[in-house]
Length: 225
Image 1 (tube, rainbow, N blue to C red):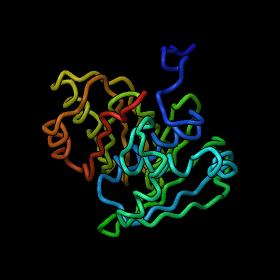
Image 2: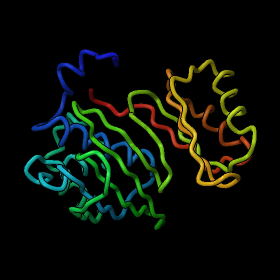
Image 3: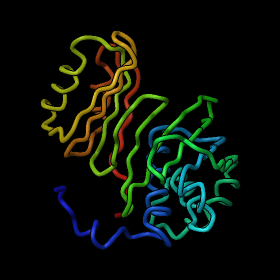
Image 4: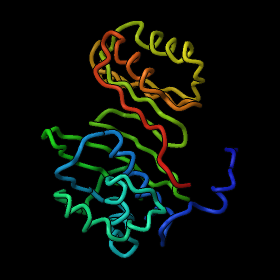
């Protein structure tokens, strides 16, 4: 049985009405923002299942936008997020769709950043404000945001796992969970580390120097409960 914390019982501190449809949605948006880590010019939200049916009535649309603006689920400005985003020049689209065999509360973010780079982030709100990110740019991942998280996009070169794991050891950082997914042997790979301590800028620079590492994404804190 999984450990249950006090916030799992009480629910998150948030702007309501629904932990799944607003708090969880805001966290998904905030993770997407952290992954892109650049100003955005256009975002399409592909809304699946319950999100597709109730996104206006439950405020899911406003919560998702609040997230990509960096707001926590309890930010009082969440209700005005759409107008705030539009004032910042971000074009928004809400697209009810069918994403297949995924959780009922799932959204795919299609993001164009300020450099016209395209991003895809797929995530689900799994209840009580908890979330999972399942894909980044088509690569399978599993990110919950409960722990500081490091994602590396790299070439599938022997020894990469060992080199990066050693850096965590040398920085006295304990790995809580690690996953490795590769598109094809010898091609692209993605590793996800959930760890017990926040990641410093120096640590990020060390990981970026590992041969074959193309990009490092860090999610230290989502804010809110």
